[in-house]
Length: 328
Ligand SMILES: [Zn+2]
Ligand SMILES: [Zn+2]
Image: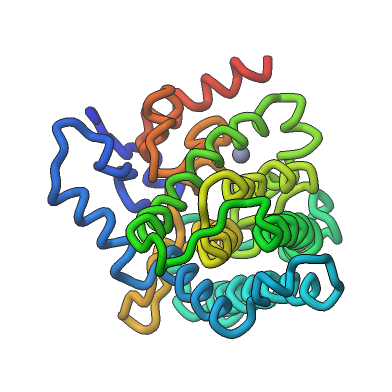
């Protein structure tokens, strides 16, 4: 990367974290220390990734119905799957929203955007950004996610999807678990690019992009049709040998990590202490400038295809020009 200059971009944000970093695993020559820092920063600290993994373990041990019970569709276990989606989503998005936007526990510290979330705005369902986002998350996203999960568990229980155990293939199970976020990033890039096709954008993806300024509930505040695409990432488990815990981790990663990445704050703080990594400036730039950073920082598709915004003034100019070209 060359010529990084924040320039006027600095003034457009309350907090500008500097040049956006991408996964160094894809840099050549490879720098093992940088790769170690990247992955240890994600897996060995309180982050969206580790929270999702911890929730998956907890739910697997105490609440996930055994596969034998899921051989035939019954209201009892389907309801339970819905609740193990709905409750963690509400607790984590609601908790973060309360701390950052109601209690205002850390004020404006590490907040990217200067503006507050939008109230009394006719662009949103119920004229309110937060209520709009809650409706699309708990109504649309949780319904589609639950339906897909139930289908896959049902297929696993009947032997129609390949199931493995940690006892039989421990190495595979660990490797596949670590690879799930990368698969999710790959799938997200392509479905998200599709959602930015002008026709699909206008009717579907615009629901998510009502949120130019974002909060925890914006994470998976998506139109029904977008959710059908977004959660189709789970169907990999119909092909790739998986344990029920793989699917559960995949689900929480897909459902809960956007709560953190859309929180609007780079870090969650308590007093002077940084408690957890939260917001993702890479995606925050996507919400402000639209036609950049379609993927995630995990796999640098945007850099490869020329749509990467690194937070610099120059990239804002380039993105605005691309947007004008796309819509004229
Ligand atoms: Zn988008
Ligand atoms: Zn988003």
